[in-house]
Image 1 (tube, one colour):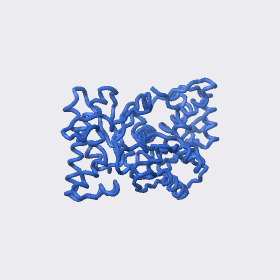
Image 2 (tube, rainbow, N blue to C red):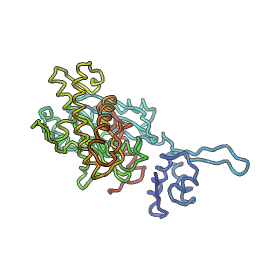
Image 3 (spheres, rainbow, N blue to C red):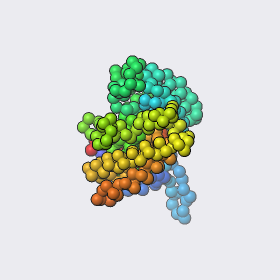
Image 4 (cartoon, rainbow, N blue to C red):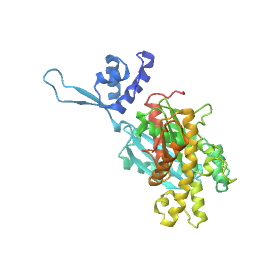
Length: 384
């Protein structure tokens, strides 16, 4: 990945972020390598690395000395120099995770909760946070901020299950204010699909790619679009809303893609056959007869997603579609294979690759944990 800095005094913070990103993605590096990679001068790199070392964000390691001169020194990221807290809220669960600057998951936990209310989320965060920090082996001072991944219009769902007044309180709740008062950290929010795409971009397979589309398959269906190495949110922040794409089928109830491709639909198909699914983890323990139902749903989902991917590919031309979310990884693998088999029959051009995301089943919460790291330490995103 090419990273460009600016040798201007007023751009010092930007240059520091660019340098840290270069070290994180390509380190360990010498200062000369950093200068070549970022386009900054050696004196600028020397000053920036001095500040980053003092802040505990990078470390300096000495290589063996050669025949002449001083021992060579290389700069590497200090993974434990800062931590991001991620919180993912959805209609069927609340998850928390702590990740370090290297992208390693230090601790995580998830609780199945049907249509959690704001008070439920606060109680779960306050209960689990001390336990997570103990598991991660870090103090609260290492947390640089918290990210929250939550579906758009969370409290405005027109579903019978979401009709209770406690859940509908989300429609008038500011999650940033609610949590910042309790955990005393900077709070950053994003919808769950874009959050998952950001996690893939910064700490998954995405750092070497500049253009991809992330499909987030949960109780609903969402998408996150990355163009030019940056999340693209569109004019109103609603870019990538894959679930709302219209479809044409023989079933009058199937009006948009989420009416076919979502865990909610899969659960309902299983329920019609007498199989009650209480959590996504149970999908990995289906009997052979139950798997036939799931396989039929995967066939339908693959057909509809392949058609949607053709439209997206014709307009944005991504190199890759990543599939992630709450569907178990083996089922994501089957879905990916079926989509890859269909795409060449639907496209004249060479189709993009479809892969299971590296951060698949816990993508949203890990992407949420990336939000404070990206906002406070990495190069500032600019809308394309």
